[in-house]
Image 1 (cartoon, rainbow, N blue to C red):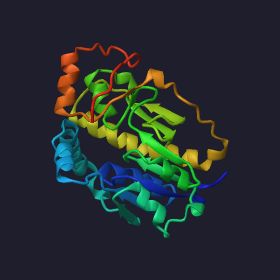
Image 2: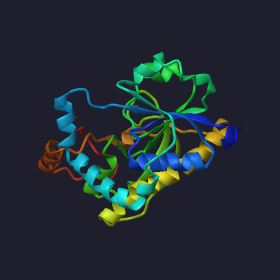
Image 3: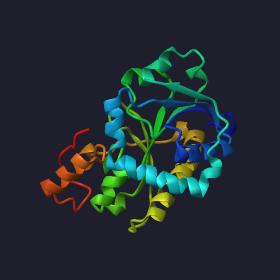
Length: 253
């Protein structure tokens, strides 16, 4: 068992506003952050435009604007950062010594290659913005609102494996709200940032005695980016998503 003052982590995150809010609570709990690893997701103009023209990106920018008004004072964080193009670049970085780390935390990051998971001899723990088993994938929070599966609002802290949000579960916490509004979205995203950070402090302190459990992937579904094409496909298919289970199909990236 460790105490927070002896806990050192890497954090894989885009380091946007809500992610900085997450890091703020880790630091206040005496979690030492070796580096914040920021990965560039955009390699070419086509992929960049495709991303920024998606519905989810528009919604993200809108909510971030209001979050900035609410908690913009925490935007500056005094932490060391490493910017990379691919997670595999980390393998050659001598300044990051895995033997000194307690864990690697993933908050808002993309899928991590298995070669990277094998290269670090510490657990990778991810914060996923939905209750599992349920929705997996980057835009889970938007799809659950579109499909009105409000009982899956919240987050899951789980171990990272080579799949998408498929690792063993350490903790879930629900967020109870059926009101879709800007204020609700701001509250919800910042609520996840704060509460998941505090839960991770407890998990890291008692990780050796934790009992992660596998979730049944048959009871969950993967949802890709919320794009215009995927939304129209969802509407045209006229599928009844009345429950979070028995959801079929995978929308394209």
